[in-house]
Image (cartoon, rainbow, N blue to C red; front, side, top):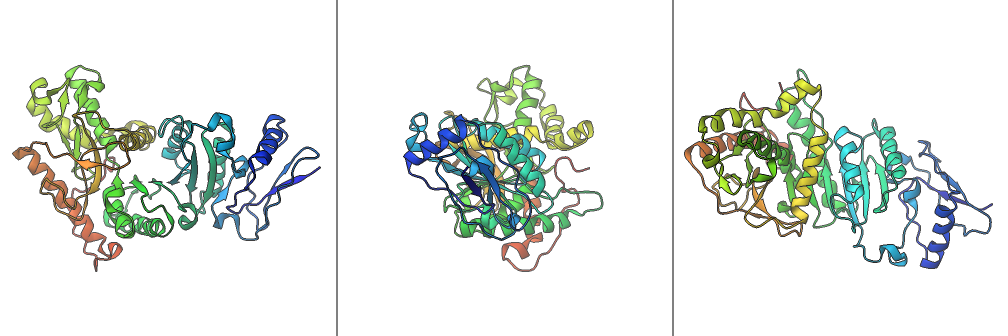
Length: 437
């Protein structure tokens, strides 16, 4: 009986199409291949017993610690010739997607949406590159096992690792979720420093090994400033390619407007979240529309808009924690999907979406060189442009200025991580993330 040995190194098997067809038919139709999770030993292997007379596929065995590299996992260690398989000939070129914090709750919802084709489409094969930590590596193996067992046709490769320089190799999308939450007794300045160091290192790794046009969505908090740190440490990647996730805030705002107006939330459009993903964020009811009409023409209670609506959106995360006992995960993963799809599908005529993006060249008079949530449109090519036809009044300007001041203070607090000198932390007293109590 021949034995194909799959090492824990990040290695692909390259076969001619005739060999691949023969091997894949044997392996999958006869169901004679049993994979085991990667044992964390120096000479770890995964062995797959195959039927007699099959092709032997030797792979060099490497002796390094399996956790030090991005390991292909189980059945995903097989290389597929998409052109040779009849059912995949209409598929697009495979894309590489990295996810940090891949063993966490948000990722546990998100990864299966991506693998199913819900995000990038039913004809887009993908490779998932999952970044974890030494502590989470065993859980990361569990995530890979669940992906393996789900039999997603579009999911062609999965690799796991704890080194971003390995995991981020050639990625076209990087979804940076992993970050330390703010706990009791932890000052916000400390959180900025701890998480800032994580995102500085990930920015350097992206700069070194990712695709030159990689799109980066930063979810780990404080996401605006973490996105700024990341892009400052990746000078070879366009700053425009970095996003801080504020789509969940937009979705929450649409929900509250729909409830107040007595309509379903698909009737709410042109919703903007301005500023920081914090309690200073500004849900913009001035430019938003319900059934195509200005919100203020539909909801006559303007005091409710300025007070209760604004505060409810700003503090929605905190209320959820009180009710649920933990921060949002499922709705956050949905908002990440929404954020990606807003970039890979054309924006409906006349509408826009919110994303935290680099402010250089913005038409609103907002301070440059920070990451600030603003209204965007996309042609569906992964890029975006800022919306120019928006209105401002005194109330909106005042709220935006407060969030702007907060982000400028955060920027000064991480100057040592962006290459701009010595950090000076003069954070406003009320600066906090949604959900921080």
